Every structure is written in C-alpha cells, then in structure tokens.
Length: 305
Ligand code: KPL
Image (cartoon, rainbow, N blue to C red):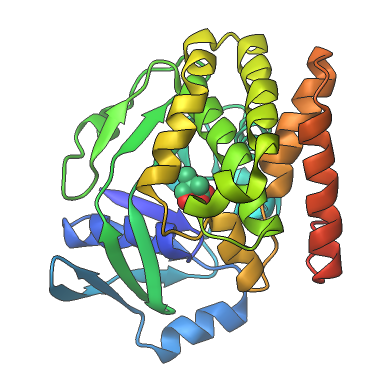
C-alpha cells in the first residue's frame, strides 16, 4: 500500500519507518526546497533503530505531490502547523482520501475535517515513544498502542483493518473523542506545571501543590460537560498513575520549551479554557494557569501566535 506522510518529526518518521520496513511504499511530503535538498543530501534514506537493529529504508521524498489524489495521508505535524501543512494539499484530498491525524490536543482535527469535507478524517492517540537521533534517523524507544477512530462515526477503512504489527499496533475506537478528551485532561493537568516549574513529570504534585487538585476539579467538570462522566470520575487516579509511570520524563511541552520550539498550549490548555467559557463552566485555576503559561512563554521568546 502507498502512504503519504506529512511532518518529519519523530512520530511522522516512526510511521514512515514502520510502514516502509513492513514493505509499504512511503512518500514523505516535504514543504520547502530546503527540506527537500536536505533529504537529498542525506541520500533520501531513513534510518530506523529498533530492537537493537538499525535499518536503512528507502522512502520517496516529495516536494510536489502533483495532481493525483492522496489516498492515505498521515498528518504528523504539530497541531499549530496543521493549517499551513494541509491547505496546499486540500485539492488532492477528496472522497477517496483518508487522513490520519496524530496531533496532541484538540482543535487541529476539526480544522482538517472542515477543510477536507469529502474525505474521511481519522484521529489517533499514540503511546509509542520515539525520538530523532539526527534528522532522518528515528529511534523507536518505547512500543505502545495507537488508538484510532472517526469522530464523524465512519467505519474503519479496509486498508487500516489490513495493517498489523509491526507496521502498526492499533485498535479501533468507537468513541475516539472520549480518548482525545481524556488525553487532553491528562496533558492539561501535567504539562503546564512542568513548564512553569521547569520540572519532570514526577515532581508536578510537589511543585503544583493544591493547585493541581483544584485544576483536576475543573477538568472533571469539563469532562462531565462533554458527556464523559466515567473519564471525569477516574481523572485524579489516572493523572496520578501517569505521573508515577512517567516520573522521570520531561513532558512534550517542556521539551518544546527547552528546544526553543513553539508549544501546543492553544490546543491543550487553551482549548480546555475556550470550552469552559463556551459551556459556562467557571474555571479560574485553568484560566489563570493558561495566562501564566502564556506570560512565561512570551518571556522566553516563545509567544504562541
Ligand atoms: O503525554 C504527555 C506529554 O508529555 O505530552 C504526558 C502524559 C504528560 C507524558 O509525559
């Protein structure tokens, strides 16, 4: 099968590498002549490290995808980059196209759905760990699961049903919104504090103190308002479990800040705050945290807009 991948970060290249390694034809869509030249300079090869193996994989690097419709597009950009990455491809995305959105947070998926009204837009939540040893060299550090579903209620496409590990370890979710919202709530509870206190996940309860409990109460109200009562009921426990399991990790938001990259706050705590306003839920702790985070990022030259 042929796959197009948008976004050369760790997750995009992990998908590219796993699919190419399993014999699928993979095309990496790059957006600038500079990126294209860079890939040419490194021989257009993808290095994939996993299970003490180092594979060199052939993938096609493509600056201009032409006029043929794209059938399977994996969108692995950061959430804020989705509009600029997808807009130029919109004319290639029609009724025979499926997009798989891998973004953190919520908001970019809706954007894709509105832009590509005739296509099927799937959302995924991924727990694999991957990092780039160098551009074009991806390390699969932790094997996880990809939960995929269609918020519009569409069926699992046959091509996805035909994919199996190691190409993709996935489960179909009838209610992917519930999965995305639970992940959003967990990220809201952990990531902002790791940035504001510049700490690892495990230090969040001690550094945030009672603010964490107050924030979780607001997040529970938010989950309730979206119809996710079971997720609301277990949120405090789930957050505590994630903090314990990932105690030594630096959150994705903190990693972005350390790397001087724009963060996804507008799609995580920003999205939660906007939903609270829309639903008429008082969320002073969340709103205050978002404001402090924006000030903090602006002071570090990382304004989000
Ligand atoms: O998903 C995460 C992230 O860093 O974005 C958590 C769950 C906080 C783990 O680090």
